[in-house]
Image (cartoon, rainbow, N blue to C red; front, side, top):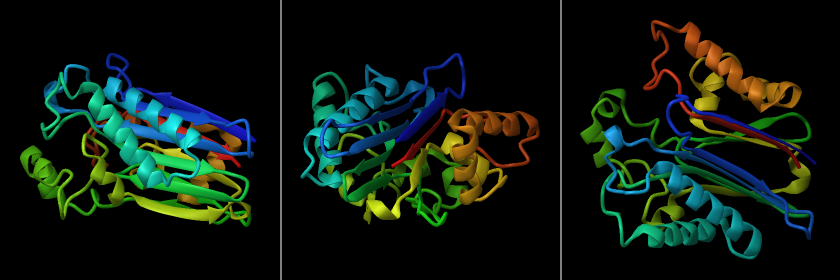
Length: 259
């Protein structure tokens, strides 16, 4: 099995709010992958004394533990349990009703001898490659469906955050787990997979340097760090922001796994 991971902060002066892990249980030939992209609050306004990196580390660690130890529990229920446990860890010190309470996008993948289960919540990207080289992108595109004119307004975007008709992230409400995009594929139908936060997926979905097949081929040949380096070069070259983006550089994480 081949596993490669790379991550880089969008700003070296700020903590990286992405979080990633791959764990390999000792029995059953299985494993689990977790990738989170923390949502940066404006001016640190999230009602929490801990901050987003604390939240993603706490949620990510819990997701890794539970997805490994509770092999018979669905990924939706794993996410719900992890959100509840994380919320309980700071319920007494923080305002969890705050619209910007620490939150994150989620990719969760678990594989055993026979199947590969996956879950995606919000705008990170999961790529699944079949033995014939076909690549399927598993996406939760609800945030992308919101018109740009709405997304330019913080208040308008917040009104759609974890709300009907809007988009969903892992925050303090376990019920959002049921909103995730999920699926199960026979392990024999998966050659490799990749998980990308939106800072890394920019190479394809923002700068259009190649499609998802090209992206996965680069990950296989050059590794995740090469993808992030190419994204950084494109961002730096686009000095006039000809390509629309909210941040010049974003936290970027890429994980590549051959199962």
